[in-house]
Image (cartoon, rainbow, N blue to C red; front, side, top):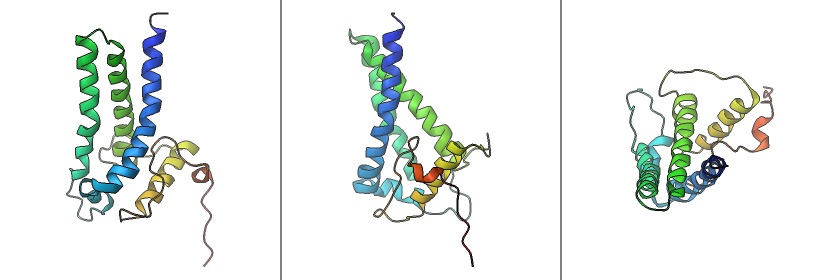
Length: 157
C-alpha cells in the first residue's frame, strides 16, 4: 500500500501535465511568450539551427519539477517529490515524442508505424501548418483528436 499512493501521485501528475502543456502551449507559447516559440514554427531550411529560443521552455517546466524535488525531500511534504517525478516523466515523454520522433532532432528512432503514432504526426503537422501565433490547432501532444486517426484522403487532380 505504501507504494500505491506515490505511484498514483506520479501517474496523476503525468496525466495533468498533458493538460498543463496544452494550456501553456495555447495561451503562453502562442500568447505573450510567442517571442520564444516563434522560431519553432519557422522552417530551418539550412538545417543549422539545432537550438531554438523555443528550447527555453524546458526551463519553464524543469524549474517547478526541481522545486518539487527539493521541497519534497527537505520538508514533511514528501508528496511533492512524487509530483516532481511525474513532471520529470512527462518531460522525458515530451522530449522523446516531440524532439526525437516528430522533429527528428536526434536519429534515435525514425518512424513508428501504428495508428497512434501516425495520429500524433498528423496532429503536430496540422499545428505547424500555421506559422503565425493565431489560428492554430492541436496544442496538445499525447491527446489527439479522433480526426487525426482517419486515413489521409488522396486529393484527385
